[in-house]
Length: 164
Image (cartoon, rainbow, N blue to C red; front, side, top):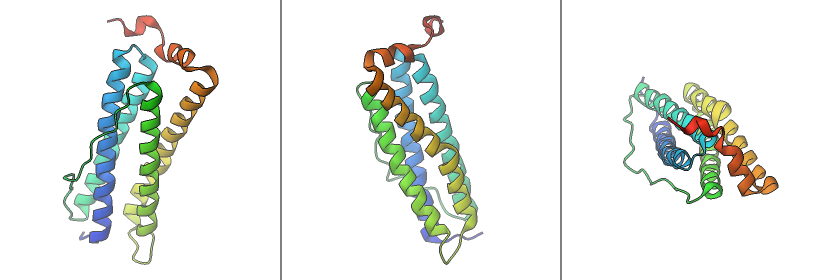
């Protein structure tokens, strides 16, 4: 099915965003793991896998529309140096992706409807992006309320978990 160039272009922009997010989460998750923050490692690694699933969904949609996935204009991830900056960078990225998703959905639901692409983007928006954004906001709120050291202690999980 031949798709509209404007839709394919927007889907490619989302694809780049999902892959950059996956890269950022990959690095952050491994940093958490190295620091012994098992709970953060597990959550962010799970988010990384979700981002790759989103990328897969977008690639399949682009190919279905007879487009070519284009990740040539891929910026680098924004890697934090400590737990608060890592969570903040992840939140900032998620908020940017949410804005892009909403723009693509609005475009696809416009006069020249492309409802399947809109549905794919809505799925990403509703199921994961907003959930992850809420979780990141909660984590930053916990740091503000309980202090960084207490938060880090709670994020470490069971000490035996990290030993293998």
